[in-house]
Length: 322
Image 1 (cartoon, rainbow, N blue to C red):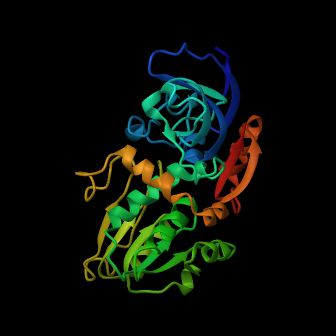
Image 2: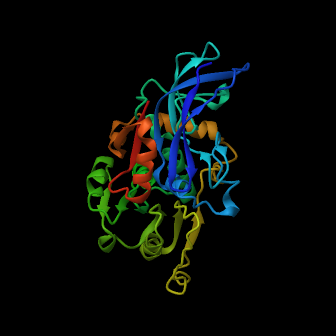
Image 3: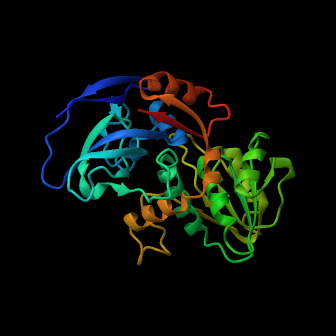
């Protein structure tokens, strides 16, 4: 079995590429050779910086994580690769796997998701983020014709806005402090606004900016008895909210959304495999290529991750090639 190379967070703020021994294949395993992986910038930046709270370290474990928080740790969950060995029906198929950044790896066959023929492997790195956005839109309980504000035009926010705009009659506005995100909004078929220009009286507000000030804005934009869905994860950062303002008078509802569990409204009929199959099917839309804003060689990941964690600039999804 060939050895592999893997990215590890060696210490908070410092990554390195390590040689990784591979186990022998057992019955029902597959050997995958990575083609691409995607950096889930918000969560991975918190992991890279050692900012996962002690209380959340068990819940925040990735499916095939090695090591323990804060470090050393091998973390990630957006890998696309080619099955080199395994059951006949999977051999030579291109698959998505919730696996860290690594050149080759062995996983159980039921951990891989075969890509539809309509989905280019390069775009499939968005699958984990789209799965999160799907869960968030489910948690938002969107209704036909709702006025929807999505705050935060990162990858997950953009995907949530794109999904919401496909509900019949919904008017969707994507809100961000970065005016360059307006071109992304146009490509996704939604309106764009900076915070000071955002429309009030939204029936549903989805917050995905990762910023406490964005969540404050979410409360301001919400109409009477509107629902505010929190998709951001703050790590060890404390968040203060003005709940003494109009929060109670407007009878607002705040709901958390996290991809680790299927949204309660769908849980009786859906599981994570069905949800992932939906994400891969939806990724056939080529407009989503606009969310991949950069690409680097895998071996440069220690430097790339350090830069993205400190100054992400206009980065949305950053793709790695192997």
